[in-house]
Length: 203
Length: 186
Image (cartoon, rainbow over all chains, first blue to last red; front, side, top):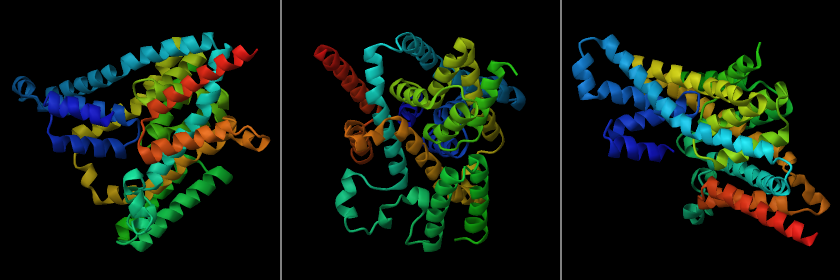
């Protein structure tokens, strides 16, 4: 999804520069909500505000330019949604109608385990830095124990920070699974721990 | 509260409190839609995940429109989808308008270092409950294929970088073959 947006918006239409696009990805990832929607909204706003003809027409009144940007954001977001939305409604209709047909039930019976596999792979990808290209290197177990540096930090650079990240992972996992902690409170607490440990103490 | 309003508010919550995109939304969505509101069953939820993965578009919006449609037709689908995108729209616009340098902020980065492992933990959670509903536990009774299918799809995506869409298409094809074989046996 992200690479597709990039090829259209940066290389194709030249609405923004490469580094502006990287900013969008970073911001989309650190704000709540679906990343595709975040990126579309941000692209819509930025490309309108950057556009020379828009600046020419509305440059004197920043309010008006900003309003046009908001309009651009809404148009971009609506465009990314409407087609899949219609496809999804049609599919829902078909599935609801043929719910008890032998082929439908059989398809879903095989789909369910595959989807669980998908979820397993999603968490493994986030948890580890292992893939088929570096599996030979990993047998040495040098590279951060195979744990993702992006999500857990580097064990070499900051052993305490790395240990803390692993601890947060395990505590949230067990706390939510066994003790039914609210996810929103867990996330708020972890943000606070992050600010304290990595910001104030500089781990 | 009317059902549409309820759908909108629920998906607003889901969209507003999940960092890291579609997969991170699943645990919150499961909790709100299946456990709390009991709009749909666990197995149906899993089926919707499968369909949303296989269809084009943004995963979270696909999920919202499908769940919304199931509960209250097209109106429900619109309410749920709008709820999902509202927080993004508002927050991203605020950031785009006010300050574009948030990503370089020292404190934001520190908070994120604490958040990332927690998000990974939350993403790991649904596979336990969903695994149960997918019949993986049946391997104890000698039905091994669901477990096998899970392991194979996980490894293909994780280690070999196969696109999830192919896995879904492949599994669906297997399902069709299975149905044909089954009915021809009868």
